Length: 466
Image 1 (tube, one colour):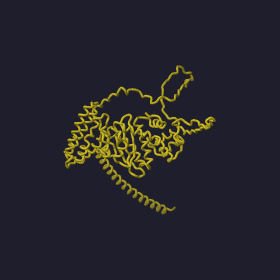
Image 2: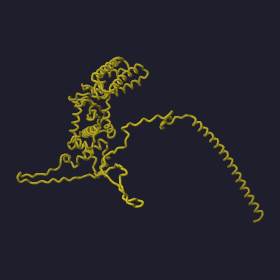
Image 3: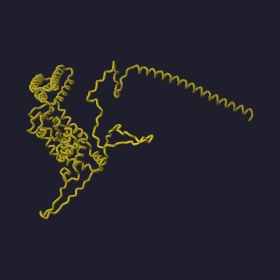
Image 4: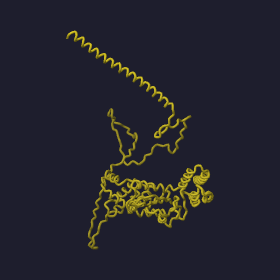
């Protein structure tokens, strides 16, 4: 290569390097400007963070706020009662025992002596699920030449079969318990029976077996109605129920105590004839209910629900918060209720003392009712109500064990309200009757603290569940 060519090549490389150097200088300058900008933003962010840390900000609505720190010395923990100072008791008696022995030392193989119990451990588990049991009953017959007739062997003991059905009483009771007490739908019931007991059964067959169980338990439900009529205290309530798309009502009649009864009945009407039909002329006790007019048909002693009245009083006070006459009237009426409750909770009282307080309370209620019952006043509606039911507000003062509210009946209706929200009701009169009978029997067994399955099975076999 000649000298001129070499010089020309070096010049070209020099120019390229100069251009590259200029581009790099420009890039460095731009990066410097960007770094200065980021530093300014960082300083601004740090300043904002410091301001936010200093400012007190409430937590968002979905975050539970911290509890305030305890000031002063920590309170001394109260000593536990003596009856709770014991070890954990065994829940059940052992049904099987396994002993674990060691004959030789695992390290030197020397034979062990002086064997004794080191400790015990209780393991609670379930036995393997049992497949469905199918029993074939073979009945033989023999000919009696003297009587000239065929004689048949005794087929089965009472309570082992249900009519002409293939399914026995234990299976019917289990289906009733799972569907009524545990509220399992048919699909879940079918899956349970197939998974644990290897029994495949259709949803239609399950519905038919529930109807059969209700048919067998119908005399028991009728006996519960008789117990309601003979009870000294009955709480009643009603709620909506649909049968085949038509609006109707479920009524419940509940009695308190260890021998309590839960009796349900369906009727398309919400009228007073349902109360007359269920209670009949035999009932002579105290009827607890809300202020619905259908219960007015009962002419005996009556206890109206104070919870409903206090709720309406609260709404009245909220609606007329600036009216001092309303506030004063509501507080006076509430004070009468508090006075009665304090008397009842104070302890046992003689009947004469109860009657004296009852008369005094009724007189005060009458005075409060007359204040605004005939005047154009916000309290007029409630004043007329308490005046109309003045002798039905404090029966719980006279009768020992009578509640001032209707909570027992309302809680008794709750399971059927849940069923109604899920299923929407029933589709036929037979379905409604089945639901009411099974609800009455299983709810009563539960209220009495009995094992629902065992007690219902005893009823199916004709035994008492007491």
